[in-house]
Length: 400
Ligand code: FEO
Image (tube, rainbow, N blue to C red; front, side):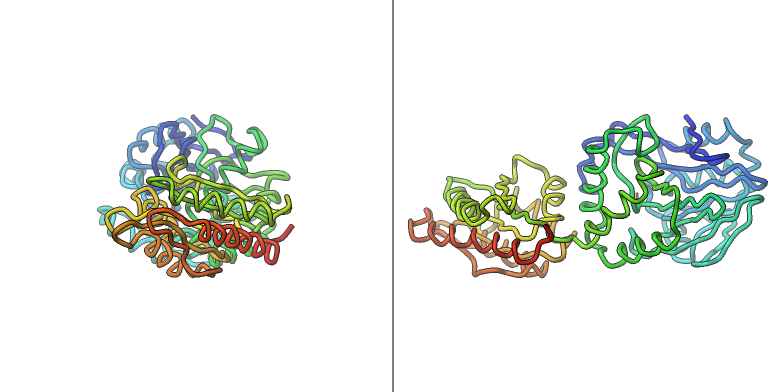
């Protein structure tokens, strides 16, 4: 399957309808691996696909151009969802040189047998003429790996942006204006929360660099291609998401064993709702009814959140541990909150949650709230007050 993106630039990738897990990210709408073919005097492939789909990629290319004519294969990112098919591509395209930066070459050499490949190393600002068109390279370290790079087509004002601006969204459509906007933006936000949240500073820098280019088309390596008004829509959205900018939204995340932690969660929400007076969105989220991908997407733009767990075998519940481990790695910035929960004859669960929040540099609004077996009325009153603290923080820091 091929689609023309603009004149003589084709999408030749793979739609992965069935992928549901992506290094911890639950991809409930599947994904796509976007590979692009530029037909010019020196035909050029931009990125590849996961290894199992190499044959389909080669068929897509061959339908447009003999494989022996491919002169350049640009690798903007060494992660295997984009580089996995390179061994097959480089073997099938004997006249192609692999274009990447020095860090990318090192990673590719560790992943694959590259002795037969001819590399052409590039840096930010360097260009490569492929005929009527010129490629210009922009290194974007840590958006998403150290070797991440974008490739700019100045004549068309088209940026192959790699992971940035992507979405895990399988569809037969290729352009942002051909799909429901609410789903598109939801998946774009979910993608930022689950892939890029740890890298707020480098991603912000990359977005600023993209703005300077004033692109007409943003062609990411997953999901739909942004064009027309969609370009400004996604750039503006990134201005908020890539800094985890707090909105008027607070979360109470919890799981429970024998309802003690749940009683505390409900009291925290009660206090929060009373304080919010509808000016702040207050959400109670029971962790096992969601998945970790949904939870971190909610956290992305929350101003403050509380996390509660009972104690099981001197630690937190496995459901809470799953989410906290994932969240710890993504380390959302600009957040405040606190931990709460219960214990019986041994302590451990709520203390562990608080330790993780501290490690994530969450601004702790109050000391740990703990119930021994069952919360007393006095403790539930403290929980209600704690809920008010979440809302006050949201009103203080959030944009409207
Ligand atoms: Fe889609 Fe960082 O790979």
